Image (tube, rainbow over all chains, first blue to last red; front, side, top):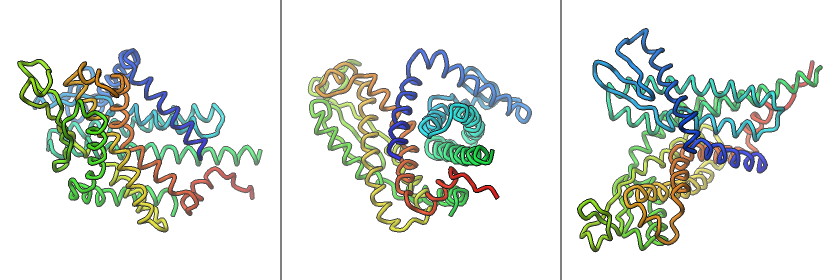
Length: 166
Length: 199
C-alpha cells in the first residue's frame, strides 16, 4: 500500500506539472480541449442545430450563451489520476497501456456528457449550472476514475487466472 | 458489500450529504478557514492584515492598497485590497468523503469520519492558503512575491491548480481507501486480483 501510494503520488505530481507547462498547454492540452468542444457540438448538432464550437468555446447561436472548456473541465486531470494509479499498480506494460488507453476514453465519454449537460444547464438555470459545474461533476468524474480502476483490477485478476490455467 | 453496491450507495447518499453540506454553510469550512487564516496572518504578517471567515467566504485583507491604479502599501493608499475566497471550492470534499465512507458500512464509522474530517480540514486549509496566495500574486504582484517566505510564482500557480482541480476529489478517495484496509470491502477489492481456482 505504501509503495503504491508513493509511486502514485510521485507520478501524479510529475504528470500534473508536465500538464501545466506552457509548451504542453499550447501544443497538446489546448488543441485537445478544442477537439472536445468540436466533438461535443457534433454530438449536439443532430438535436440542436443552433450550437457552434469556436476553439474551446461552445456557443448557442440564438441565445448567445457560451461555455468555455478550461483546465479541470477537459478530463485531463482525471486521466492523470487514472494513469498514476495504473502505473503504480503491479502489471505488465501491455496491460498498463491497454488500461490507460481504454480508461482515457471512458473518462472522456463521461466528460463529454458533462460538457453537454453543463451547456444546457447554463441556459436553463445559472445557479444550478455553477453548483453542478464546481461541485457535483468533478465528484462524478472521480467516481468514474474509481470505477475504471476497479474494472482494471478485475481484468488483471482474470488475466492472472487465465495465465495460471494455461 | 461488494464494490458495485458501494458505488451505487455512494451515488444514492451523495444528494443527501451534499444537501447537508450546503445547509451547514460555514460550519464545515470553519476549522479549515481558521487554520488558513492563522497561517496566512502568522507567516505573512507583512503582506496580510487579516483573514477570517464570513459566511462561506474566507475574507483576506492585504497590507496593500490601490492608489490611482498602482499597488502601494495600504498606509500610502488609504485602503486595503480585500479578497473573498469561496471555501466551498475546497470543502465539497467533505460531502464526497462522507458519501464514500457511510456507504461502506464500516465499524467505528464515526471515529473514522472524525479522523478523515480532520485530515480533510488540513488539506482544505492548505488549499485556501494557496488560493489566497494566487489572488495576492495576481493582484499585488512583485511586492507580494518579494515578501519573506513567499514561494516562487510557478510553485504558487502549480499548487493552486492542484488544490482546486485535483485535491478536493482525490483526497476523499485516498482517505477512504486507506480507511478501508482490513474491511470486507477491502477483501472484496483484493479478491479481484486473486486468481480464481480452475474447476
